Amino acid sequence: MHMTDALISPVVGGLGWAAAIGLSAVASRRMRNDPAASRPALMGVLGAFVFAAQMVNFAIPGTGSSGHLGGGLLLAVILGPDAAFLAMTSVLTVQALLFADGGLLALGCNIVNMGLFTCYVAYPLVYRPLAGFSLSRKRLTAAAIAAAVAGLLMGAFAVVLETTSSGVAQLPFATFTLFMLPIHLGIGVVEGLVTAGVLLYVAKARPDLLQSASNTPGSSLRPLLLTLLAASVFVGGLLSWFASPHPDGLEWSAARAGDQQLAEPSDGLLARIQDKTALLPDYSLPATSGASEAPEESWPAPSVGTSLSGIVGAGLTLVLAAAAGLGIRMLRSRDKPGPSSQAS
Amino acid sequence: MTYLDRALSHVAALDDLARRETPLTRLDPRAKVIVTFAFLVTVASFGRHQVSQPLPLLVYLAAAMAFGDIPWRVVLARLAIASPFAILVGMWNPIFEAQLVQLGPWTIAAGWLSLVSILERFSLALMIVLLLLATTGMDAVAAALGRLGMPRVLVTQVLLLHRYGFVLGAEISRMMRAHLLRAAGRAPELSTARSMLGGLFLRSIARAERVHEAMLCRGFDGVVRRRSRMHLGARDALFVCGSTGFFALVRLVDLPRLLEPVFS
Image (cartoon, rainbow over all chains, first blue to last red; front, side, top):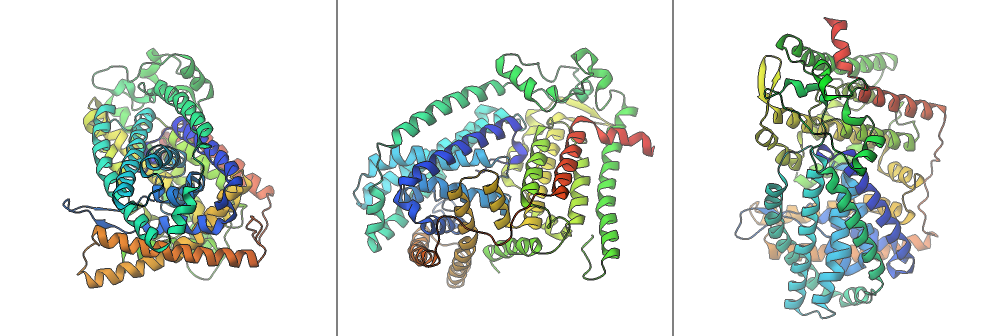
């Protein structure tokens, strides 16, 4: 469910980062009045709990597959939404850095997908109204399942939006949505069951923990939610502009057997902004201003003889990479006798 | 050794690598964080069919890994755990992008190129983050992110998580081993998982309370202080300018194509 660097465009990654930075700043500011803020060890260790608990795979009855705890909802119930959001942000950051789950560029999107929707939407708008302040088994379980499903479905749908807007993967929007949502519906039910199980376990041994979390004021969430709603409409609208076919490198448009244009140049305000801010507009050399010039500038070139050049160049670069790595290691190990470096 | 043990020892190995003295570990963590982000943006900014143009970034990585004395087996072991999500989503490209393209003597679906591009992006992004961690260490990366503007409460969170994630990870690993020995290697049922996680949760809370009191006894005021100070020097500036300049060159000029007449 982690969005990954391999499928993301800089625009979508940047928007995710902007949203994540904004949310973290808001959450940190709101934490000043939160009792959990005076207990960073509680937040840190519970974040560590989620980090460790995600490594436990358990059998899902009747399916033959296995699942693990997501943890965002559990943290929101115990710590309140702001502390839970920051704890989830830290979990995702450490996972991105240590386990390459998702990656750094996609981290902002992952924070939105797995932190925002669970802590700021599913918890206050689904779990809290359904569960109320009762600790009845049925009510708490139903609320946890509904909130977990809602959070995961929103997160999964956001992954679909981010992936299709990035334009790297070619899975059509509708197919991808139909693929992601049912899977996450199932995962959500299991997540809800485990979360409810842990909450009921905690309620028996330490009811004070659940009671203190119940004191989190619900009304103060309204300004944040309104801001987020506005931001999501804005970002959603923004992303929809980029959902059009992304202009690819013109380099090899001419090599297509059908001789069609690979991408229509998009127009509109945001496309112009993108053109102005892109590292290299339209991914082409400045000389390639019109599509008609593309055949001369394209890679691989249309004829079989010259088109091999692209492959040869790539092969040479790989050889150069290996040579650079081995050469530097050999030079360094000659300069510094001692434990030999691994240069295989 | 369970999967958990392997994951934990793998991460501990990264921290060990970061503690050595190499030209890259001596650089300011902020410089390395900035270069890592520049690298990632460069990789992501390529078109989805540009497979050969980003390859010089591999030369950069190979050189940097050599300067940082990062063993290749660590890199390859990490690459072997390829992102299932990236592959699961990317593997449909050859079907949904079926336009034929001529690549040398072969005619293939355009989707194959974009699938290779996805794997290439994945590998490059994974390697640069591995390089950052193995030459900097998690604590220094968190401190650098804090100096670059990450909220203080979040930096403290990341540091505590890194510290206690492994303590609890080791604890849960022992619980899993105990379960697997008693359940003939079967994964725990849902009800067992609830009790295991519930028990661990309560112990985590108790541990957090002890840690909190210990932190207060030592005068914790909301800031986790590091012993080593950060200092951006000329060497760091050269590293940032040189690296980002090279990334820009790779992005703007198709170097593999230029390279070709030199060798043929």
